[in-house]
Length: 123
Image (tube, rainbow, N blue to C red):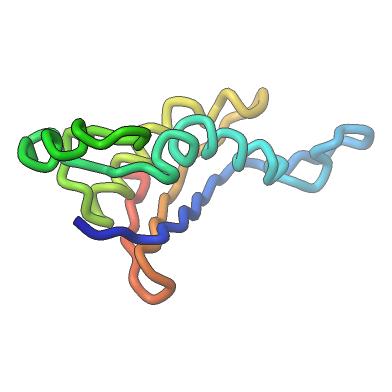
């Protein structure tokens, strides 16, 4: 087992709000709204956790013997590529909850290191 300091980057597209008095005037949406969504559906679940493939029974058995740890069991092997795709899958259904206009989740990028990353894109 080994660990990474992942960083998550999300790209959302939509029309820029053009309405005086609207707090989103001049924005597609407020960054804090995207960050809150990312935290609720991905970061809060995965942060400081062992991300383990459900088929890795030896590792799962070992982790279940450790007290006070957080394990997230995934249906994919936790490579950067698979984690980007899984994060995209977790976020996409919730993107339009952010505001009352059409938004598109364009890309999820997960950095395994500052120089290595994987992307999952809108089809």
